[in-house]
Length: 399
Ligand code: FAD
Image 1 (tube, rainbow, N blue to C red):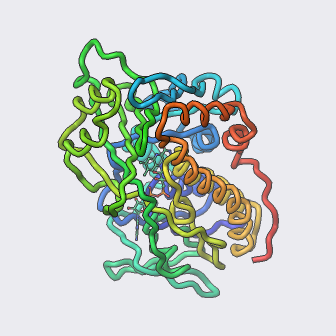
Image 2: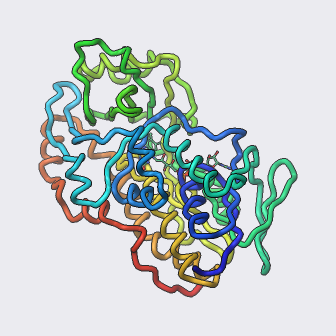
Image 3: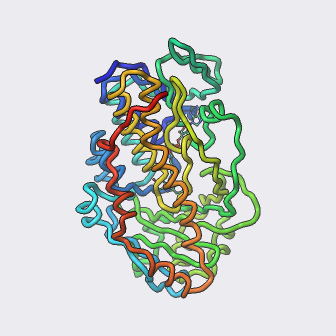
């Protein structure tokens, strides 16, 4: 191992907790500062593919996640009104056999709780709640954080894992505009017990139609259906997972969809429907300075259309841990990490943005034509899922 460092992490989301756990396992001192008074994720699902689950295995949490997650056998792409399946991708054992680790669908509060447990096992005092970072300063000897309550902390390195509205990013690059993509996202959970007993439960379905699509899959061992809908809307709406909206608007948005979709919307938790704007942010051409770096959404916010945003944060975590292990000089290590990650994450950000158009065609035939061109066993799938952050080459780069 390279030198033991005192590493400060801003943000205890999936990225912050994963990198904290990996760095503690590698022998560093770690402090995580989270603005919220308690840890918790929004009640929604998250999909995690092999390129990230192999890292979660290394962190020692895969078995615990297996106990609460769902392993979908396949994902289907269906026409929104007729329900015709026009394409499918086999997941389950095949994904694991091909790519060396499982594909999992997890309730966000479960993954966050399990990551938090792991960090506390490794260092009971590592997580500091109710500590909102306001700014930082770096000098030759270290980095100093200033929190909104007036307290400070000092260490060797700062990792900004503070999400899409990152304070660390905005200090490093200046304030940036968020660009509205023209799409809003709906999120609601459907409790299994609300569904009619004779309802044939969907496995993992993408329902696609003109100007809108929705994705449903099970989480919590099959107790809850996770429902995410994306709708084109010219008007701007507030950004963020906790922006509530009326159930009646959700129902109206998907009124033209198949009767199975209506059954799910009717059974949804009507008092807890959320709808918010999906934004893009400018691509960064660097995200590390001498002692400060970014990780996850703060570095490369990603639209949800490929389900890879949190997966990228988990990949980042493993590569950063390895760079700090392999390279003694801090600035060189942060550059080696950034260099190893910047092209891959940029490609995934771009492909996720392009994917939006694949889900929104006017006619059935356009969908059939577009999906006929897709090869689920493509080089791209191998490039995406076979990536191993625990062994990807690290090159020395001049800081
Ligand atoms: P966040 O999860 O945003 O965590 C940031 C943390 O920092 C938070 O705890 C926050 O409170 C804290 N924080 C913020 N500011 C401060 C501060 N100043 N001081 C201290 N703490 C601070 N990705 C997938 O891989 N699979 C999916 O299936 C998937 N589905 C998605 C569905 C939708 C609808 C959307 C919108 C996104 C989806 N994503 C998915 C993307 C994924 O949610 C994000 O990429 C991921 O949560 C990013 O993790 P993060 O740790 O970088 O940031």
